[in-house]
Image 1 (cartoon, rainbow, N blue to C red):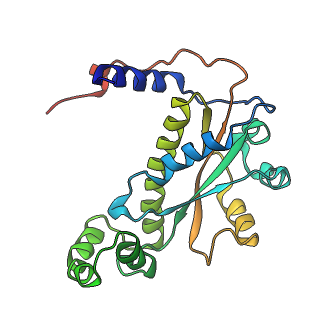
Image 2: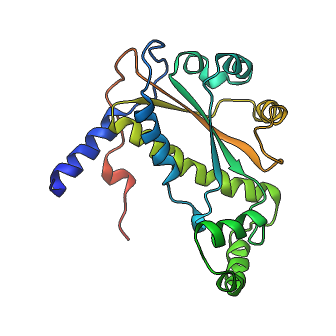
Image 3: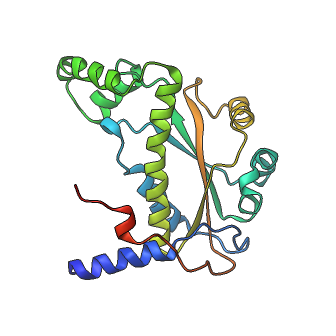
Length: 219
């Protein structure tokens, strides 16, 4: 396949995608297709390759009903979507946290002595980004979850599965609910964003965007 065809296919994917407000509750995503969407999330880039996320796939109708009072932004998507994902962000990801050391040495297979030599560079990185509080660290992780979110929605659109990102929710109430169910680990995670997947019941409006010359400037 040549480059021109690949570009055309990708642009068709972006034009197909829209924020689906209501899904066909009868039509379900196949296991194979949904694994493809999850794999797009898993393979997403993250700062330092640290993967500061977890994906909770909420398929239980009972659990969805528990979530509903706290998710004003998904009143139609939550009950009708084929798959509903809560993306969690890892908390407290400091340069010397046990998770980061494990990620770098076990998953990314960096020798411990090399990681130790890089500590001054990590310290400078954290200083430059003002990652000096729990809130700043959580915000940093949360920003990265949006990379995975975007890739999952694009992957879904590429195989003509619809999606809708969701931010309208009561964060404290949902974190409390997830904590009570033991879904936040040992207080390692916080909810970042949610996304619903399924198949649209009606076509979306034509995509409207500002012209490229208004949003791009070469300097």
